[in-house]
Image (tube, rainbow, N blue to C red; front, side):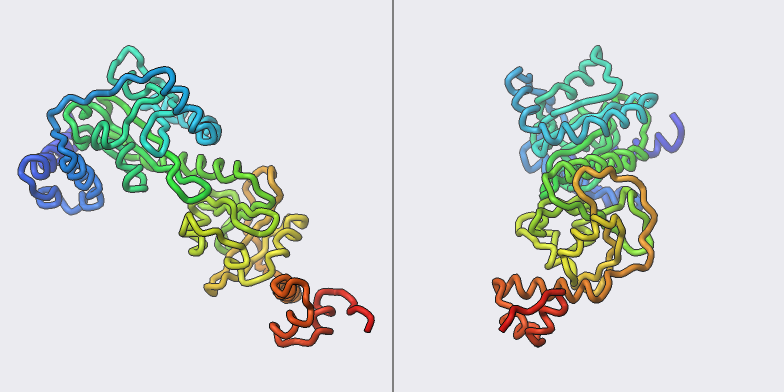
Length: 371
């Protein structure tokens, strides 16, 4: 066993003894580089609070056929989005002894892929559709940690809570739905395998692809692809925002929610007029031109936006040139919004805007009615 591997296992054992036996903190015995893994200690303490003990036998409950069908049916949308991604993922890990596991938001297995050795009971137990692999059922794992911490994690051997699960090494990433709520998680696991912490990047990248597919599957009238000025479209860091015909946000991927603070809450509905300091109707016109534009946000920041009709393939696109939406379009959009808020009363809209009734008609390219 290489020296670095020995040292790693010794550190894990020291941390286990500190938290699970002595009631101390793992940070008291591990070097400073381990501070970023404090979520493991939090998971161990949650397990202890449940009255669990590391030496107990883990009872992977048998799964009835009805429970298997129920789990698959309830996760149909998640499975549809994940299958092509998991198929590509299986190719990436084919020579590593790792396999992929997909769970719902409760930690119930709903899909698997990759080279699974069914003759190994340890592999077979955790890859049955419908089996509960949540933290409350099997203690600290990448599955339970990712669903609780809502961040990608890497977990090796004795970092699992139970002695029975110390044969596993796993990477996991949460899956957020188009509504901003947890929808499940993606896990890569191997048994008695070499440590591969780089798999955390692979599983996180694959999770983003599934989240994008889930967002695109949400019924919508217009898709907005978002990025910061100067960055190209089609990257894994691109924001996706789905609008209905009235301009209400009906779905967004996590990148879009990070770019637009108003989308941070997964509960309150948000209209795109609350996001962009301009004419939201012009976004629908932009889809016809298939051109990216730079739009100001109410925060004073600027995003580049590419509006597309549903079903259009998301292919890499160069960054938008420095082409902001023309001022006249912004003005017209604000005036249309004011008229709509005034329920079609042009005079009332003009008073709200502090301009004349004739200016409203002129900016909208319409003739005033005859006196």
